[in-house]
Image (cartoon, rainbow, N blue to C red):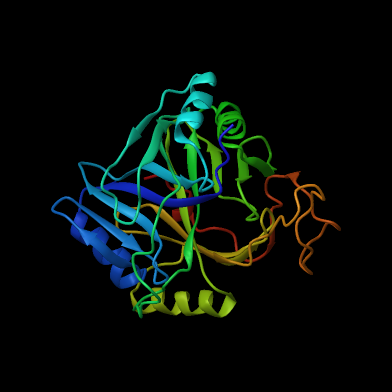
Length: 295
């Protein structure tokens, strides 16, 4: 079984490449690490690649990359994937700072790139805008959530952190409560993408930036129940939902099986569970209608 260790970057197709670059650069506070005619690569101020943009006819998240252990043997991983009925290939797509990748598709058709060699693209750069620390998680609609959850458990080594009812699943591959989320829906498409901020003050500053840029907050600030992160949500120029968050639950010890205790937890200890729909927030407003609108 492959053991994904962290999410690397997400690849988006966008019909307006210039507008997308301006959003991620001027508002989000990411650094354009490399630019080509029809694609661009953006990194955090720390220097980690988090977003690849490709010019296309529609807005869509087409690929995720995950880091594996540095001593991983891609040949062995390819054989393990084949045993699970997954075809893979070694590729080098000239992604800045990243070496060869082992590429395949998940059960819903999203491309997954596994990588082990990478380098920083910047070093503590001074940026305008929000300036997130990292890409935190990516959530998708999927028509068969049980199949998708099983794929990520069996093939990529993810663990279930929480469910909301039987239609929303949170999954982790490291100490973070979730790195991918899956929500039941008729079509495969992005539900939201989330970026981690340093702390609550950083989140407050991001709200001020949204106010200055006249970007409406469509949900939040609030503290979720699953993951207990404090979060806000807005839409980017491609009409996709973007989350800023901090204070996400941490599973420090898998054998102990509970999340690092925090005063806002209602369960003692807080273990993975199935939450009741409609009773999943610790505090904060209900989402605006615009949050539930599909693109």
